[in-house]
Length: 361
Image 1 (tube, rainbow, N blue to C red):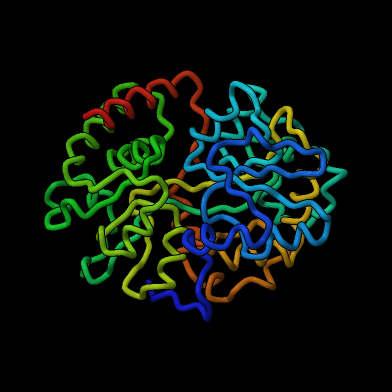
Image 2: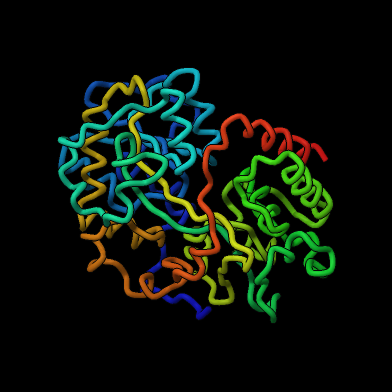
């Protein structure tokens, strides 16, 4: 994969945390107990996942100043909301989590009449299996999960999951590998390596995947809380299991870095915008969804975070480097060997138990 060379410095986690207050963002480290003003908008999103001007342009357009909180994974998001909404108006769950949140009543149906920019979406993203016809969710970004790696450390690219699960393939990279702190993604990678679906509900297959991870765990530096790309950039690891856009962001800072999806396949995902039950400002949440779907706003977000956009109207405004970069917009041949994570119902307990054993082992 050729080195990614944009003409600007990307919006990184470091820049966001240093500059957030300048655009009217409050990072609520202590929770949301002070939130909920009738004229407010309380957002709960992933880290490094918004444009540089998105919040400020919304505030200027509407007079509403968003407050912004961060979560590390879908399970953290669900845990915060399942027993009652602490004050959020807008959340950004992934596909399988949307399905779970619908079934458990955590999110509410959307009023499409308040979101006229829905017409800007690519039709391929508007009728998902987890939420037909976008009744409860609106697509935000999509992409893959795979390996970010340092090319100088891997003369032969780590094209297989063996790079993190097989002792011989790991070799001299022992102690220099970061895995995601995400149970479905990590166990899913092991399942793909073993030739199974990453959505299996077979207890024997899940157990075998957990055993494989436990056997390889001695080689891992950490299970990273969505910051594996920073460990890669700082040379603390040679390879990190990460989401594609996070790796593309640091590829812009170091041409020795690259990204690929393992040959056995991995996760293909879509993140979404949803309104949780008992949101104090649902009308403002709808206004922000509509703002994000504006062509120029959508392009500004995608051009900042380097994730693939489902916004067809924004496409003419997207960076050509991103559009031509298979790490951002993967070819069909890569997508064909990937799977979306789905809600596995009662079998989720098997994944949770396997993950607990992995973390304790």
